[in-house]
Image (cartoon, rainbow, N blue to C red; front, side):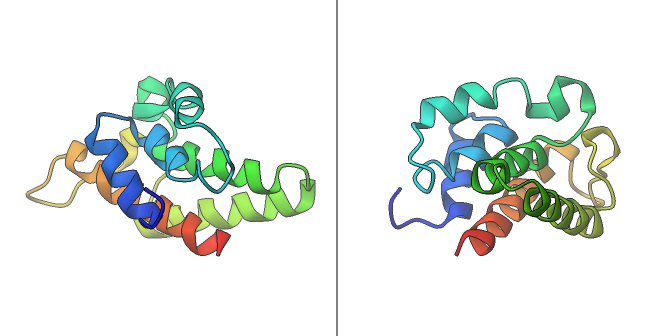
Length: 128
């Protein structure tokens, strides 16, 4: 997956049955010299909004990646997380899985790749 974009990597991981959080965090493995198995394990309970419809797994995966990049810089980490959360909320209206609504003709489950791609692209742009 070396020359593949974060979006493509995240899509491949999600297609391989990784949850939203795992797919988003997983697309950043190479950047952080992290084994994919580590991303898979860290994100295991964050898909489906922590498995109970709370914060979207794509959001938590992105926050984990931002934490890896900026977690040792408290003010910067806070700014980066708030910027991502605002961008996601502005794009989709909510952060919680149970509140995210699919447009007519699509199911909520069909929207997961949209949220994953948004988060992956945001991270790729952020880490350039």
